[in-house]
Image (cartoon, rainbow over all chains, first blue to last red; front, side, top):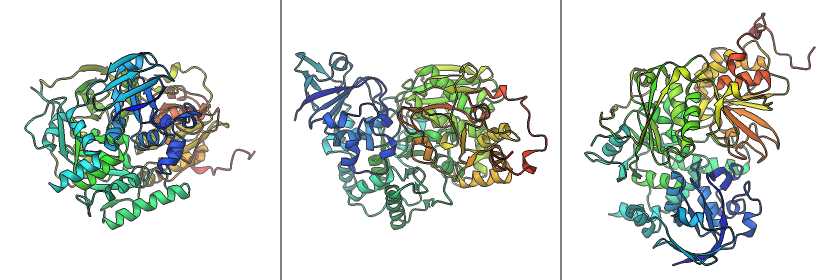
Length: 164
Length: 440
């Protein structure tokens, strides 16, 4: 299944306090978290995102706290995939665990701008920038991580293995 | 091929002879930790798994510390959901307000982590326990849910960065200055996905409280974990607290390190990290004139007894600068009581500081010291991202307790060595009741 949408581009080291400020961590309601996604970086963000849109960012996206509220907020805001040059490790595992597609592709990040129209195939890692007529290939996800994603996230994966 | 301490612990945890960097392993857990922010999501995910009980009620730790004591109704609901789960599951290590502390100060203090353990916590600063020679790392809520159900967690075996320490830190230099110095050198992603492994004869010149501070901020360099070798200081710390038997792992002489940084502790000076990144560290003496509004002394990074002793040592018999608000938060009830017995709490109050019950509160802009637009704080906490302590236009400067206390006295970022000769009240603050600033 492919994801098609508009790119919202951010810089390096976007931290989890930027993705969802801690003042909203007194709830885990996805809708509420989604409304405040990226608020301190770009207050207009959640109002402009349409379901299917894509976040693109530089190095170390999601650094800082372990709050799973960050990928939950991203998804609830309407974002269907995040492409970054690299991810901070806890954000990476949280996104994998909840089934938010994430792709590492520094080349695509370097050659894409905010507002570009983009298509992604998370399974193959193929990224098409329709605005600039360019195709990129993301780093393949490790087989172990693909297994979790194929199971439908860590909860489904663990439930399946506990039954064995 | 040789293995690092982290690799050996993960191999043992996964029941393997050896592992190499880049391997994927499923390792058994000795401890799984959650707090009032992260546990509610984990509990919800746990309920989706058709599992009745946690894998081991003695190996799950739940601590209401972030927005506890309850800061508002929503926070109260989150704490209540965790409390209910702890009771239903008969969790042995649930710590209620009044008995609790900030998790990463509390858990080592309670002797719940021992060398060789594999620990996950749904809190990024879970890496703190590497100070005790354990593999310990932060994960998310879903990881915690799966860990509570299965007793296992998936890991990619990390490469290592080596940090070889020599020398003795000078006065007013401790763990926080060491780690801020390191992060200023390698950057906030300098250790991304890697373990930070400390070694060298300088290790013995770092107290356990300092080592806990250093490992606590390994995540601020992007690391998976930080880890110290076990020595007499570790054994002494554990002897007073832990009852579980433990296994000591040492790095092989031919263990592989991506890079090795050699640090002579005697050359370091008190540090401060400027907004809005922990990598913006520089010596406090080179800070220039930076007036401040608030000082926070506490958190999982620097709320331990040694930190409070350092701060009280500078504040004792002196008065906090008129425009500065100082909030001191002992990290656990035991630390609070110890500080009370040593007279440190009186020193703080006489100097004009507020002293709070344990909470993470201000560190993440939750409560107990949120900043207004344009305000500046020196904090002994761990992050100074935009909006971390409140308004997105506020600023946080990270430092150790000595710089924080010195800055409280002068009203600007200050090297504690500049305070040395300023007079103390000769009558001794302990004998002189605090009457408030307006009293003439």
